[in-house]
Image (cartoon, rainbow, N blue to C red; front, side, top):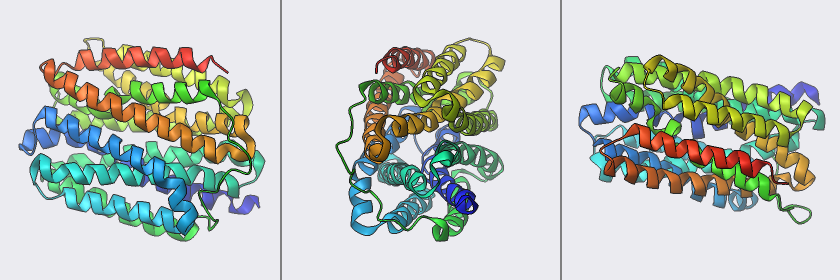
Length: 371
């Protein structure tokens, strides 16, 4: 049984890599490039980032029903296809009106992949490997962020279209690897009993997502235009974020097996607060540490929360995880649209956006103390 553990976990990692790391979050280093190329304004780029988060809500809400209807493997294939189409279509410079629906589709695909991949892999691996499996699956997010950040700088020398097409090619390769390895279970299974209420988990995870919007939408732009370091430096900062995310998710899954998911979540949220606070300092080298810690905590918290859900709900963990993912998506999308409005209203003040993220992250720690 252990022999099949790693291929399953890596297939789940490929799903989160595509759905979150590439289709959604590779937009962050593209943000300043799109503005520089004149495709959109800074405020419009913020709206595009918010649109992907809004699409994520729909994907998370419909994922279980889709999995029950067509099965895990076809549902994950549909999510991969949606991500690929969104990236290919975004390569055409049609401005805000053209890009908006494709960013919605990217978010939709990400919601399906994130909601179904983790619980499906956990159902398929031995109980003693579930914490490690959740870490590997969610590490795909950080891996995708790092891959996108490494791939984009040379491609962006040829313009945003080349960047989008490069991401699409990488998505196609990951899909080819993962598809035959996805678990072939019914998917989106209804819980055998009622899903327990865990308000501390739900609220903390939702507030964590809202608090990470500044990093997940504006980090590269803060480096590129806020500090005047340029588009390539913005991609480099996003690469640091991705490497931090990779460490945070792999370590989070393993540490949750030892400390427990709830305690690990509180620790990761404390690191998130530190990352937001560092991003407010007016010295750009500190932003490197803020990026690394933001990735470590802001993405890694998903791995420890998935483990927390398994501890709190047992066999009903899939249902609890989907509810938590929906709460996370709703909070993050709402915060993203609100912060896009604040960003435009304030004359594109990065400091105000990151200060609001710090406030929300502090509230997440307080929520995680609830049972």
